[in-house]
Length: 298
Ligand code: HMG
Ligand code: MG
Image (cartoon, rainbow, N blue to C red; front, side):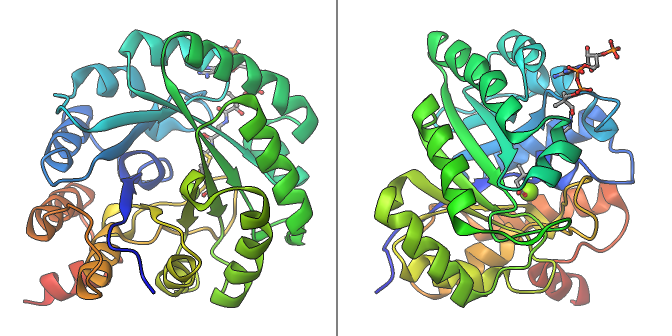
């Protein structure tokens, strides 16, 4: 039994571009987000307020966040790792803060330069400040299924980090298969454990498609009652601190699959593909999504 409706959260402007070698001009990012805002997508993660020395492609976060034409009904979010990032977020006055950390110690250390236990107090400050300013907070846990440094992740460890973040006040938890190692059976096993403790409507799935498993993993999650999925248009993306990580599940492929199965997303597929083509032109090479490859071949 599949749900009637699914919520898609577009993370292309953030996850998709954070590791991109082609330099995308700030006005082009803004134009892309503005186009995305008119596709029916209701959540767009537009940038990261992180250290630009670590993530140079998103060094223009404040310009992007203050330059877009915000559309009513669309939630605009950004990654915020600490109070320094929160300053930028609040200047731009976006709608939703996204905090992030990993289930595994080594990835957390490489990605945000702290141990897992050192990270909680930093994120607590960010979450408290967000809530005081009337902003909702989404939390990511990375390496839920596997870690590039530590191998397969212990589900108890992933659940421990997740519950701590929920206790700190996040409203939604996005479970990351950062390096695309999960398969549908593992997704089912991990979700069985999570769903004993956390209701499905507080969970989102964030699948990278490194080994071509992302859509199959989405289907497994749908069958477990999950209804929120992250995607990046064209299949852009990857974490610079996870060697071998490639793009997210392509939002265009995801929406195509869902609509084909009779699951509504509220997204206009043609507008979505046009907006993927816009970014593909700026990047200057074919993007990996199946949908775009089909369109490119015509
Ligand atoms: P740090 O270097 O440990 O920070 O960075 P620090 O607190 O020791 O400060 C050192 C310097 O960084 C100082 O500058 C600070 O001002 C500056 P200096 O005095 O040397 O000139 N600094 C900042 N500058 C701008 N904005 C800030 C900021 N904070 C400190 N917010 C930090 C700690 C977390 C900031 C750093 O490690 C960092 O930026 N990491 C980048 C992490 C990242 O963006 N990773 C990719 C996103 S996560 C992901 O992709 C996974 C996800 O998609 C889910 C999944 O797929 O699993 C979400
Ligand atoms: Mg990611």
